[in-house]
Image (cartoon, rainbow, N blue to C red; front, side, top):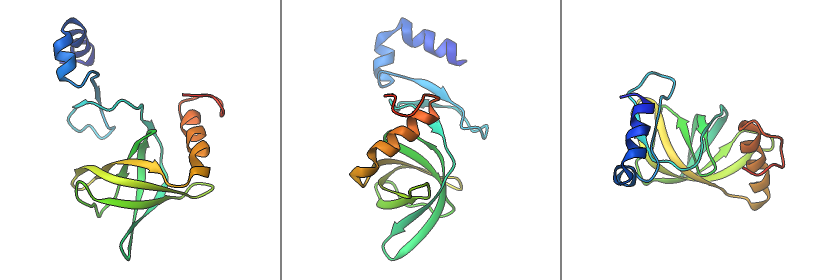
Length: 142
């Protein structure tokens, strides 16, 4: 079923849309993996940045694949389990700490996490980053 066929089916049947979480779309992650029903409400943007995961006394490394206002996908050889919480440092300028919780794991690829900017003075910087990734000038609301 193509995306447009799926969306037409959802538009024609509001109960199906409700069962699908109110909003559904298909997303190909660029690696030609099987498509999945998406239930995320925040738009995601491709964004590559190194990051460090602080897990107890260990520091794991990874890279972001995409980010949104409330989550990101982290490509990492070592993943944590669903529900694990950790602090990560995005290596951007200036470096930014984010609090994360693992929501899904893709073995061999990485993990999808929910996140929140840990330091309040970095909130605007993060919002401006998302706005710029969306193709809007900084200072514009999403």
